Length: 262
Image 1 (cartoon, one colour):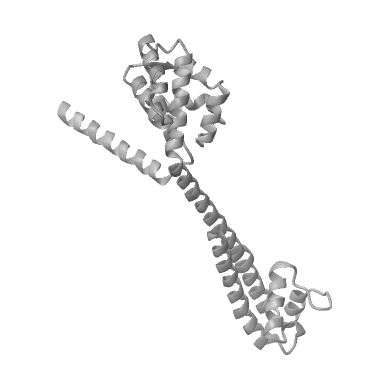
Image 2 (tube, rainbow, N blue to C red):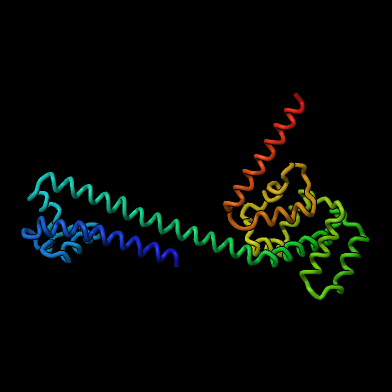
């Protein structure tokens, strides 16, 4: 709807411009050329000159007839007006329309991400729980595994059950290595959860490196969950501002350490 509104205003701008030039041409050359004999004829002729081709009613080039009749003044005026409308106004209309549509899509995407936050949280956490319990290389203690499974019949709400099970997992220092995460990326169910969460998996091999901020070669369960949630959707203004504020905070800490050392 917002894109249609911008398009309508752009058309209004073009009509106003054609109207102004049409009034001028009707008064200046209307008596000599039938194509400009009235305001309506002038506006339609101008519209044809800017879009379909500047031809007279008999099919001959109208712009060339006007150049022969009025010389260089008409030629320069026509070139400037043609460039203003085709290169300026038309491109401006297209740029504004595309920009507005893209911004509207981005807003809708952010709203969808916010609306499905709880559902996505449960889906990601449930997938991490399943993968961790299936894999024996991540070091999930047997007692913790039994405690997690014992909650299956305790909660009637899936959301509450998954959150409680995930809290148990994060209570221990469970390490997820790069190799383990690469194995997870071969799980079709896990990949579908990432796609449903609007996480880009086109270059899924780099997901571990993106989340491994300290480049330690391993991640905790909480780091994997937090990283995946932050990867949802397109980059927003809030993400950029957040990075800037954190860099500023780190810079202040470094300055403070430098001052203390000196």
